[in-house]
Length: 301
Length: 256
Image (cartoon, rainbow over all chains, first blue to last red):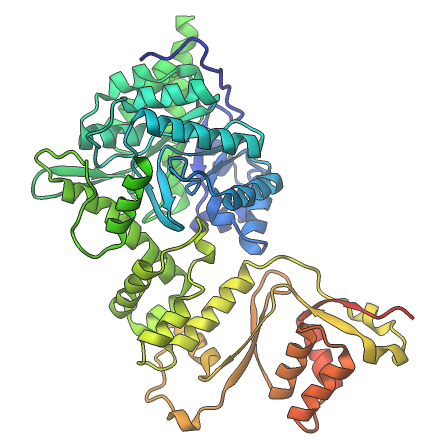
């Protein structure tokens, strides 16, 4: 299966620069130093991303702070709870709550994952894996369509980190995503750390993966740190977003940018969150690589 | 069928055993080890969510004991919706049934949950005293005062406010705790008039007044209920204190 020529073009509404995930630890820094006062924030952070579900509150200081910070930065709302792979469909009440949040925040971009987390009335708070079958593709297609109809906008769907594979899978993951994008018009969020982690854990070829992704569908890229877990029977990489981006992931980012052209790149850091300058230094590294890809693309043209 | 696979995965993810759903491929690394990554993510992240929602209770019980009881809760009562800010409302009840020692744990957890609910409640303006002063005196008994949407009223058998404050400041807990027969119930109001959560203890008349107003009574009936419980109840002083605190958001008077 190859990316069909009618794959919709996704031009990202976010700047093709580095962004950072806004975490609670840094909210005070962002509030205290709006970019006009602290150019260091403005230089390294072109946009911010938040986990949508963290802000599903009726009101209060957390939402208020985001609304204030958001005035200075383009915003991406990254969901972790839509459960796009749920066989029983998307939770309509959750979708309505998200729609209300997005109406309030007016994010430039909205995304979630190729995974599931809800079944039988229980939300399991993990991005759980799907078998890549025709049945799963139809399920995810229906769910993405439902979400896009309700939100009245295309969403981006992110490739997950994989720790296991199902014997019944018949479609390679990148082709599953390409086909999902072709059928629903959704864009793709390419997490190159996840590609690296999955490649190690379940044996993918990362470059072949990048080649199978329809470039024009990719609206955003993620990078993050991962941990190495020695199982006693071999190592598994754990996508814990708890450290600096590893060198092989930076290289994979370069490969992705070479194929896709400049894209917004997010540095995610969710556990053992460091001081803001450490995160900003990672964003600056990402920015230099986007810039290099831009220069390369211009010379090639 | 995808539905069956997801139901099987859910069962195994929440079960303490080492079972795995069918159809997982394995190589040198067994399927059980691979699946365990997800099982640990599920219960580990939910226990962490409870630790974040109940930090003082976790300190009171001690980390390992808190995590043990939180794990049992997570397995029995996983979240129903993908909204972790709302996860944990039944945790204080779980503590009441499972944790007898220290006896204040469940009450402290109830207070922390009220604090969270207040923190994330809807924003609303605070009732302006000057607007209230403009109401003619003869219409005051019929006033209906609406509590701020963030306001939570609770009665605890233990003095949780002092305990919470001590735990938050990292102080040692007074020990031994007073004998149960010496404990007076503590009435509490938790409210967030602007951005800061406020928690105050209430007298019994004060609590009755606010409960009655919250239930929709007019001022005269609420005041009567308060005076019945607390002879000599100071209505004016109490109202003024709560207007200054920001306990109310609006008032209505019946049409003439």
